[in-house]
Image (cartoon, rainbow, N blue to C red; front, side, top):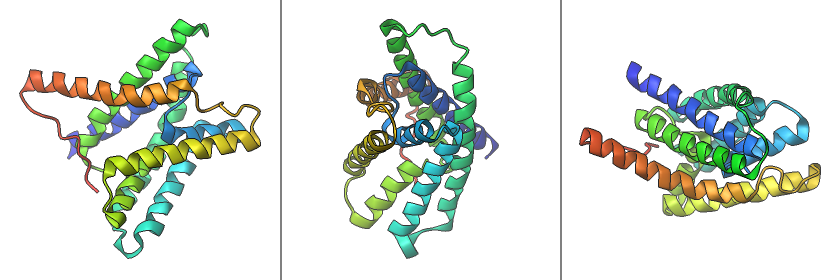
Length: 216
C-alpha cells in the first residue's frame, strides 16, 4: 500500500510539472486544465487554487450524474483535488527557473517536455489505483450512466472543456486563445503516443505489461 501511495503522489507531481511546462510554453495547456488556467488568468488567483476549485466542481458534478450510484470511495478524489492543486503551484514555480527565451524552438521543446511529463505521470499514478483525477472520474460517471464508450465520452468531455475555456477567455479576458492554442491539440496527440512508447519500453525491460486501466 505504501508503494502505491508513493507512486500515486509522485505520478501526480510529474503530471503537474508537465502542465507547468505547457503553461510556460504559451502554446496552450491540456484540455482539462484549460478551464483552471482560464480562471487563473481572469481572476489573478493562483493556478493551484483554480485547479482545486475546478476539480472540486467536477467531483460535485459526479454526484449529480450518479446520484444514488455515487459511492463513498469516489470521495478519495478530494485527495487529488488538494494534491494536484498544491503541486500545480509548486510546478509552475520550479519551471520558472528553467531558462526560457520565448523563441519558437524553446516553446516546442517545452511542449515536448510537457507531453513526456504528463504521459510519464499517468504511467506512474494510474496503476496505483487509488483515485482518478476528477475529470476522468466525470467521464467514468457518464459512461456508467449511459453505457457509452469511455473513449468517446473522453473526446466529448475534452471538447466541452475547450469550449468552456474559450467562452471564459472570450467574455472575461483580453485574449480568446490565452489558455488554448495549437499546442493544446498537439499535446493531446503526443500524450497518447508517448504513453504507448513508455509502456512498450517498460514491457521490454520487465517482461510485464503495465495496468493502465483505471478503476471506477
